[in-house]
Image 1 (cartoon, rainbow, N blue to C red):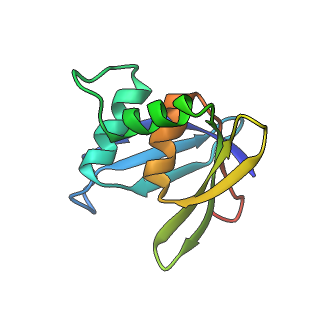
Image 2 (image 1 turned 90 degrees about the vertical axis):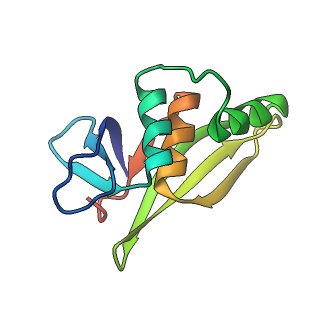
Length: 127
């Protein structure tokens, strides 16, 4: 797995009317462009720039729920690209230290990772 950083969210992609999140290899020059929905783009952009919405959005609520039961996002992994669709996993750690791996869309996983300051990884094969 390769450590990645959110480079930004961009909506001026001439190939698609949808925004994309761009991940950059933390210690390298590889980039990963993932087309995402507008709501997810806003959620990632707000977390990336440390902006707070007036009212909590779904990702903020998810963070409150996880924190309320003493769980957190430990890391996310972008694991696969199959027929143009990226796949991701969210690694949660509960209050007893047990790790729970959840299947997720990369955009949802990234939005949560940013809120928990959790590392984002991508499989080398995906890059």
